[in-house]
Length: 167
Image (cartoon, rainbow, N blue to C red; front, top):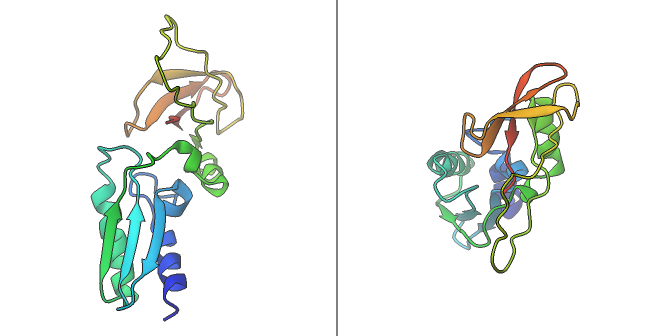
């Protein structure tokens, strides 16, 4: 066994339970993979948000894959700092989202260090349709199948689609 290389390759291949077209590496959730002296593995992941219900499935899938590869022990740790950001989704991950009809997030807004200004109207959002590319889309619901996605519709092709929200 090649240690870290094999363990990292296995961990990088684990898919997200809610967005199975993405691996944990594509999603930016996989933070580190370290092989211990005794042949075990320590994997560190960061949830997309603190209440993410997919974390147990991610941990189980990581453990299953690494135990099947022959590692003697697997410790999956969760770190919350720094908080995950949609900016961590890889270019390959963004491409896979579009290929599966999901609009990828734009750049996350920088968090101001001070009071947040009050605005009476939400800022206009231009989310391109992942199916036809038109920027003429509308939000139907701020939430979709999961809390991290919104439901939108393209005004050009009239098809509904999900959009991964920026955080």
